Image 1 (cartoon, rainbow, N blue to C red):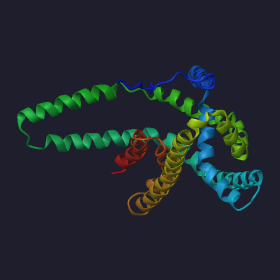
Image 2: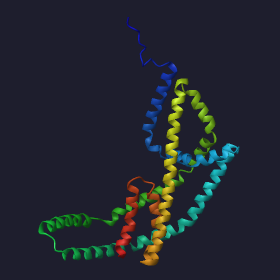
Image 3: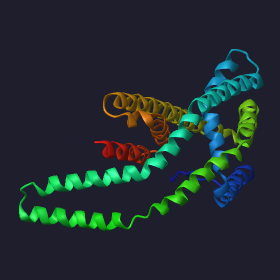
Image 4: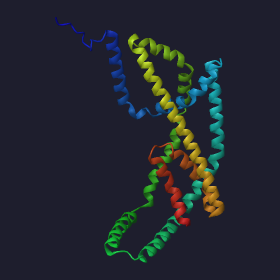
Length: 282
């Protein structure tokens, strides 16, 4: 006698169907507004970074709003002190670097000529020399077409980015209310979920929150450590080899620390100005 089998997939209830429809609509809206989501993503990063400190104070019976204000005050103090310490030297060193850029490029050309003479003095097999000469000729053709004026859009973009920072001042306000009302928001979200989905949904969200929070905090710590290590290394090189390493230590350290926040390509980009300076010196 055949036993009746219950289908594994059942028709969703009206509430589940409404929830799925809502999620799809929200996804479509977010995709259409993806160009304007940058500030909100920065706000989420801010929440991930500050939330552990808020939770630490809240567990010690500090009112959540007061805990957020305390964490904000400490964070703002740290940022202001950091900017006060770094902004002056960075602006000064950027000006000095731009002023001396033609000298750096001239010294770089001299170093290339010296290396070319060393290469020509080597006794290499004819096929190897022809292959290297062809590669160097292609590289020289590409470098010869470089116009320093092409850097101007990059410089303008950098200054535009700094100007856009002032337009993002609402991010801390938005993050403040999310941090303060986290418990109420979680309760409302929990009530909106079907009862059978709650356990698995919260398990997945906790995993995502834990992994993303640790990743972002580790990334900021790594950027800080790289910046400090770069500054210390350049200070030592400035004392031992050439004072120009010391002259641009703060600027190159800030570039290295910020670029470390970009996965994969960040360290490569941050090494370019340091290598340019090193090659022009020795």
